[in-house]
Image (tube, rainbow over all chains, first blue to last red; front, side, top):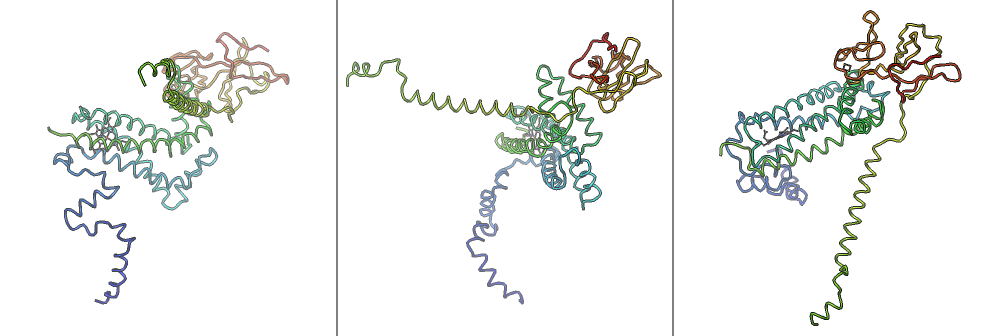
Length: 244
Length: 162
Ligand code: HEM
Ligand code: FES
């Protein structure tokens, strides 16, 4: 082989300390190595060691929770990219959205990916809840995961609401005017809730900045933590529910 | 040491060192947590607002012919001039905050969002809204212009007369 001259350097690299610190188990060609590989990997250790057959049936979960999570990841990635071009300033926000659509390469693709995934995530999280309900998966011992789920659904909707203001167009402005007025009708605390949500009395710069901060860090961070707990609970409650 | 000796050395009421330190520890922890929580909560309420002023001038009384209802887009109010005097009616719908339109032929305010209708004085005629449109206080400024103050509302029978 003409490539045989690579053998020497490759051997040197694959026997180096750095290489072996990364690929600790060697090529996973035995059952034992494979399980060691999964156990020793942070991203894979989340996977259960064993899974019941029915839990894999597509018809049972419709993979709706998984799709909701996939959408969450897509939203996080596209959202961070959009942040590189978007400034939450009342004089710039709308122009920046237009630039993303007409000037930035692939900007329109990213914006639409973000927007459609956001709509889809609300729908899918809701459908996932329906699936959990119709399969009776909210029953003991999974009540706590149902509670986390409800929180996740509300946070998903709040994420959707805070993101809706950011384009700063007529649709955004009036939707948030209406939404925050509704928040103002909460008994006793309504006025206060509206005031701290808007950072004032009108939908203006204060509101745009607060919604932006909530949208890009506060809510996603809380949701990431809750999603991790949600998945962990699925495992601790004995995996996906099913016939006993 | 006998039982008696111990009792003399440590009277029952005395707070032990352990208890004292526990109180100090928990006390300062709770105090600092509550303090920073309250501080953070207060931080969320802005003290200075960069918003349109709550009182503003809307021109001279002569600018408004008797029997007219004129909309100010800048301030989202209608200036109503009737025989009885002037009124400044908020254009913000009391349902969920859209801007109502004046409909001359039907002689009422109509909200484009969910169809609430209001009389020329702001009373609810129909629709989703349950409260009347707000009417703001009007005064005459020193330069002879009408001064509207949106912090003060007036009753429906109150008109401003020059
Ligand atoms: C942000 C939104 C959500 C994400 C990303 C998510 C993700 C997941 C995933 C991946 C699973 C594994 C099974 C499956 O794919 O169906 C699951 C299970 C579960 N979810 Fe969610 N979920 C969300 C919202 C909700 C909501 C709104 C509820 C209900 C109120 C809920 C309650 C549950 C329960 C009880 C289980 C266990 C189901 C079983 O054992 O069969 N989740 N979730
Ligand atoms: S906001 Fe005017 S009717 Fe709903």
